Each structure stands twice: as C-alpha cells, then as structure tokens.
Amino acid sequence: DLKPVVGLIAPENLPSSVSLYENALRSVSNSVFACAQKKGALVFARNAALFQCIQTYNQFYIETDGLRKIPFVDEVLKANPDISLRVGYGVAHNVKNAEAYAEKALDMSTASGNYLFDGEKGRLLGEAGPVFAVTDSDPVFRLYSQRLGITVTTFSRYLRVFRMLKSQFSAEDVARVIGLQAKSVRKILALFLKEGLIALTNYRAPLAKGRPEALYALSHKIRPLLDITMGAICRKEEG
Image 1 (cartoon, rainbow, N blue to C red):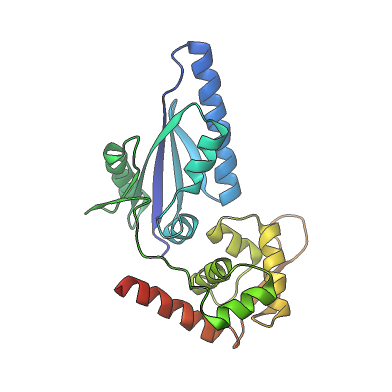
Image 2: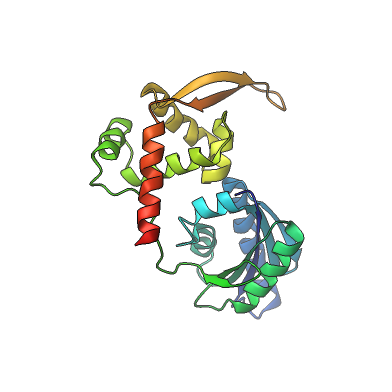
C-alpha cells in the first residue's frame, strides 16, 4: 500500500526558560531530522514547535511492526529524555487528506497514547494486535534463518518487504521500506543471494556519481516461503 502517512510530532514538557527552551527544541529538531534521514522519511518543521513527516503506509507499517510500536518516537525520546512527544498520524489516498487526519489524530493523542486516524476511526498505536511474524516452530523458517544467520522474525520481516516491492528491486528500495541503512541491507541481500533465494538480474545507472546499483528479483525457491508467511498472517488475523 503506497498511500501516504503524515505524522505530526509535537514536543512537550519543554523548559520554561527561553534559552533552555531553545536549546531543548534544537536538540529535538536534530534528533527528528536524524531519525527521518535514517529511515528514509521526509520531514520538515511545520512551525516553531511542530514537525511533520511523510512516508508510505508500507514503510510505516513495517517500521512500526504492524502498528505495535513507534521506534521513531522512541529514538527521539532516548536522545531527549527530559521531554515528551505527542504524535498523531493520518493515512489517506493523498497527502492533503492525510495531513488533515493527522491533525485529528494529534488531538486524540495524549501523553499516554498516540493515534493513527484514517478518516473513519482512530487506532491507538501500540495496542495488542495481530502478530505478523512466523513462529519459531516452523521448521522451514528455522532452517533458513539459521543458514542466513538471522532470527526467524527478521527473516519473516524481509519476506513481507519482498511482497511489497516490484518484480525488480534494489538494496535502496528495501532500505526505504524496512527503515535501515542501504549498507546494512546489502549485507543481508548478499546472504539471500548466496542461498539462492534472490537472483541478481541487472544493474541500474546511479542518479549521481557512483557505482551502478544492483537489481534483484525473487527466485523460485523463495515463492513457497512467501506463501507460508502470508498463511501465518491470515491465521493470526483470523485468530
């Protein structure tokens, strides 16, 4: 789903002293922009004390692990432990409506909870919900995760990302959705390539100076694993 998600981030409990207030706000701003850059989200200061970020729903869903957590907020608060954040997210078919829904979600949000609003209902982020990871008991996933040197959950997470991408994809494409640095993603893709789960298909010329970008496609070996992942998601949702 490539619908835009707009997030409004409002710092709270800032110092009352003018100089301390400005220093705290500057620190929060630096953290917000650093996190957004790392996760591939567009962010800008909407006013002196409100930040707005834009990303796709796919990217947001993967980053929040099925809307169960907000690592973006956690990272900003970790760097600024003396403040709090109130955050509202809106999702719609266009940025204008998503922004309006984000404003509604921000009104719904409190110090104890942040919301995603889709125009009809608000969803409290972090609520206990369906878990979209294949369990450790699945022997196929356990075998491949061991051979790749990653956890079953991480392996399942990459498979869910692969389902969202085009027939050909690059490390940058995966990185934008999963919220990691492309350098880290390339290392993981090299393992998938070695196991024959993906194949190197072509190279794409870079937009700027640099080396051509490798393009990959899913192999026949990985298709059954995608079906298992989808089946696990359906079972969890039905339960």
